[in-house]
Length: 400
Image (cartoon, rainbow, N blue to C red; front, side, top):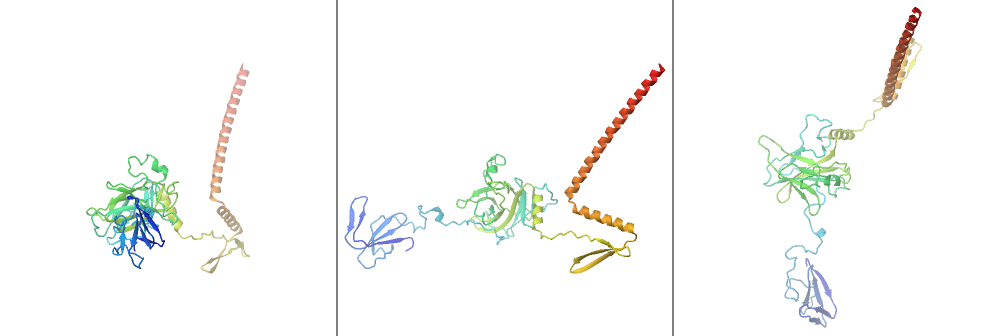
């Protein structure tokens, strides 16, 4: 039978201690059948018969001499002795991040900014479907539904890790940002990573999974508007040690009714950084297909009997061989072009850093030359002045 475990004892003598009367009920022979539940031990003495496999509902064949407390299985409630981990939970350990508009057409979007610079506080990449946002700054996220959902519908924002080896862990702020007074004073949820600047927003932590989320009411757009905008904040860097620790995360936005049923779901990857514009360009560039940029080989020039030069090197373009010939009149012009070619080859081989260093050295050398020239001018002027004074003194001496 469901919920019962049977134990058949085939001993010749069984004793049972009664607490109230301190008397013993014994039997010299015959089988005894015991039924074990989570709360009480109910011995059942069968009537005379050959059937030893007893049913708890067959009262005509058994005599219950134990407590008359009803079995907890009839009320379909879990026993307090059963560990919590063995009980069933409606919330999954790993939330789904699959895009699901549902019957109500739930969608989210990010308004494109007119001008994106390195100092922008947030930016969204359509190519990567990824949000780049600065820590503790407001980021507007827009919501809409194609049809009006049931009353009291809410929107839940829950961050999770993206990689399989981290997805079971709960996303929280690092201890440094969670315990500091900055941004945490008088806030009800200092450990939550995602915040919402809505007056009716509430912060929840699941009793079983421990996942943190922020819940806000679903609202209808204002007249003439298509979207409803809510302001969110992300309160820790993606690189914080003890928190995200450079592990990629995504935020799952779900449309839920009063019973917690998911009516729609959208997810977006989020990177919290100090310079969103720079990181977006770097990530988009990293996803572009890698193409080999080879420096074209400079053909060497040769002189034929008619004092002409030819490019002997062949370039392969689309499996075709092409030969170019340059005719120059006059050896002096030819030698000039050769020197120009050699200079261009050398300049292309020198790294740009070395060129900049050479320019700085040249500037310093020119400044030193200017200082030396000024000093020489001062010395020359001083010498001329001293010589003039000597001549004047000699003239006065002879006149005397």
